[in-house]
Image (cartoon, rainbow, N blue to C red):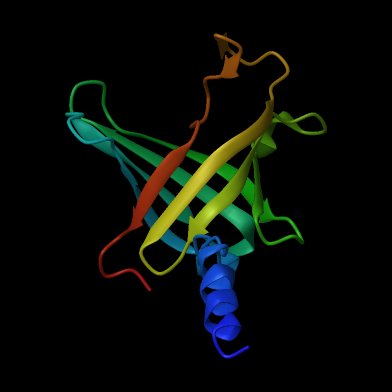
Length: 143
């Protein structure tokens, strides 16, 4: 019996899958897009989750110029689903839905799970007005 307890304890601990931390309450603030290793860019992308569920996306590009777009967002009651939409389209807006794969003090990982875009530009079946799966790092000095 004494030998059985440690074996069960080890078996139980090995079977546990550690998930990434997700705290949607840490979402507000400024997040900078992280590019895959080896990718060289001439700018960057920054998402700012602000008050009143407003999301500002800023793209910095040395050659094409900088631009800013505003969206609306909400975190669904499950605390892991993020919905982002363009308010300018009125009753039938384009939207993208993401699963918060990780959201902590330093890292935000979003996995796109769906999109809808009436009259939006599609490329290989995907909405081109927004990011696919994306990883961010919190802007230094933010929060």
